[in-house]
Length: 85
Image (cartoon, rainbow, N blue to C red; front, side, top):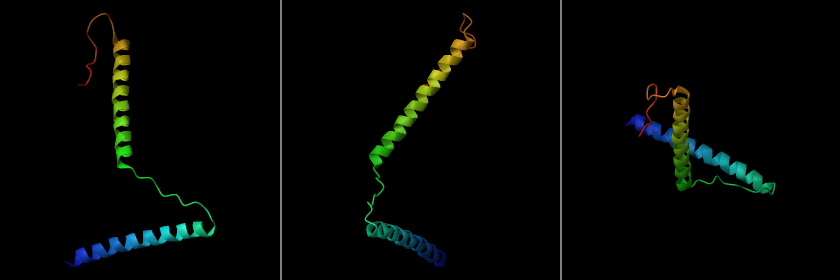
């Protein structure tokens, strides 16, 4: 039980320190009349970007296999690589 209490206290302490420093930084920006920008976290956009990267990677692999097959072509089906499904 004591390990859990120590762990929770240290994690919450880190959260408190992070919010304090963020508050100080935002307070300084307010005092200097600067604009405060918060990071935009949109999980739908993040997932969409990850899917686009995966699709681009698959297309690149297929393109590379096509180039390898073109280089290895000798009029027969030997030395030709199969495409992943």
